[in-house]
Amino acid sequence: MQGLIGKKVGMTSVFDENGKSIPCTVIEVGPCVVTQVKTVEKDGYSALQLGFDDKKEKASNKAEIGHFKKASTAPKRKVAEFVGFEDGKYKTGDVITVDLFSNDTFLDVRGWTKGKGFQGVIKRHGFGGVGGTTHGQHDRLRAPGSVGASSWPSRVMPGMRMAGRTGGRQMETELRVVRILTDSNLLLVKGAVPGPKGGYIIITK
Image (cartoon, rainbow, N blue to C red; front, top):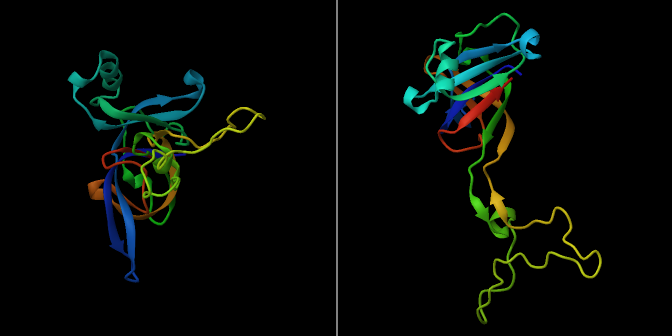
């Protein structure tokens, strides 16, 4: 579960050695600073806390400023913990870059989907709607239809697809590394990554 924090830049396409176009998502990965080293003796488990993307001190509270000063780094916008790193290999203040990953390997990429707010059943579940659009106006075009049963069981069954909040949830997908641009801290993976441009991404081996 070694990994890093990244930020979605956008999408592009690259050509492989056979001239085939590969759709890719570009992710800015790190450099991530080790902001805390957790040990079994002190915390009950072994992990590294990594920070990514600087933010101004005036946008941070005193607790955050003090925490990051221990690592001799600026306050970070995104912090996450990763397990699986070799014990004793990294210490507070160390920087881990995109070199942690290698080409033609598969990574778990986790992001947060775009939030769409409260939506009806047509947009949320792909319902087809009821009735036609001619021969008089009615209000049943985008309605969900019947949701309950008759006298038995006299209730709406669990799992009924209804209107509600859509998007804004965490999703994870497995994608192949196409190219690593070390100088620019960029990682190109084949396929789409959840979330908007500028959204934070958690990448693990």
